[in-house]
Image (cartoon, rainbow, N blue to C red; front, side, top):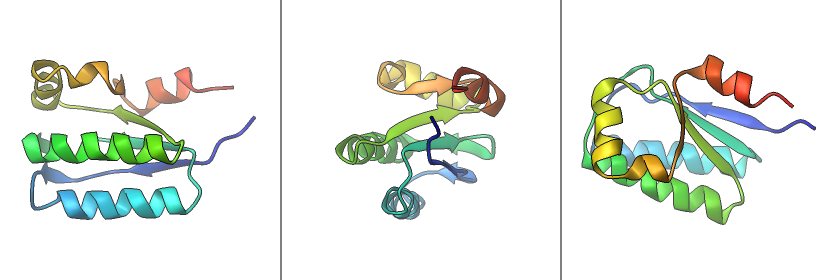
Length: 106
């Protein structure tokens, strides 16, 4: 069984100035037929509440489209933000892409 996987790789600071761009990218990916979306945070240096809000909106968007959303490669600041807001309960988070690939083999 194979799935259509797409990866989003935001860069730099994920804040209010980048959330629209992120949402547009996600919408295009969903429209292209993706069944699984992986957001790889390896190049994100900082994320604020706007970035977190964009991810919550993204989660609602993918669920409505019957698409699965996964996150990986978060730095310490982003992990703490997720834990403090309890958002780590709503997202499936992997330490890196390698762990994602290992867990997602079919």
